[in-house]
Length: 357
Image: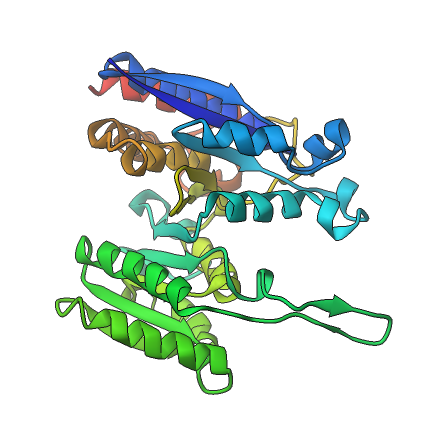
C-alpha cells in the first residue's frame, strides 16, 4: 500500500480549526483507498515566532522537504503587526515559498450552482464561472532587490528573469490544454518595462502551444472585466503582485472567500492552502468555513499524489453537501436548510465521502 507523508502547518487564527476538518476528510477518503496518510506537524507564522522567535524555524523547512506535500492553514494577525518585517508571520510564508521553489500558484475559481445567489454579482453573470488564476509566486516586486525605506522615501524593485516568466507561462499553457485552451496574460505593458518583457516572453512560449488561444490584457482592465464578464476567462496568467490582487477579487465571485482552495507548486514539495487569511476575529468560535481547506486537500491528492479518484470523491461530497442545504455561517443566508459549525461541516463532508464510494 502506498504511503504519503504530509507536512501539516496549522498556523494562526482559524488555521488549526480548518486544518483539523481537512484531516478528518482525508482520513475518511483514505479508508477505502489503496494508500495511507502520515501526518507530521510543523510550526510557521505568529505561533512559531512566539515559541521559537522565528516565523519560519529551520526545522519546518527541513521537515517539509522530507514530506511529499504540505497542507497549510493560515497565518498572521494584529498581535504580530508591530514586529520587524522579517519577523512577521507573512515573512515566514514568503521564505517558505522561496526555499521550496514554489513558483506557480494555482487558484481555481468555480461557482457552485447552489450558491450563485451568494455572489454580490448577478446570478446570470456568475453562473457557470470556472476559471483558473495562474500567479507567479517567487519573483516580482515582493522579492526584487534593491529595496529601501528611509524617513523620507521608500522603494521596491519589480524584477523578472526570462527563466521565471517562461516556467510560469508553461504552467499556464499546460493547464489550458486540459481546460478550454485559452490563456489571458495580464500585465501593465503600456507603462512598465518589466511587463513588456513579460508579454514578449509569454508570446515566445505561446508558439509551442498552437492549440491555445493567447490574449493580453492590462491589469486595470482585467480587474474590471472580472466583475463585468468573468465567464470570458479560462486561465489568467499573471505576475506576483497582480495575481495576488486579482485572485482575491476573483474569489469573491463565488460568494465567499471561504470556499476556494489553492496550490503552490514547482519545487520538490507542493503546498496546498485555502486562499483566505487567519481571521483571528472569529478564531475559536467554531464558525469558520472549512470547505476551502478541504478543497485544498483534494487538490493535494490530485496534483501531489495523482490520486484522482480520491480527489473526485471529496469534490463530489462537497457539492452534495451544498446541494442538500448544509451551510457554514458565512453562506448561511443562501439556501440554508441547516447552519453548521466548522466541526459539523467537516464531519458531514467526511461522512458523505464514506457513503458515496
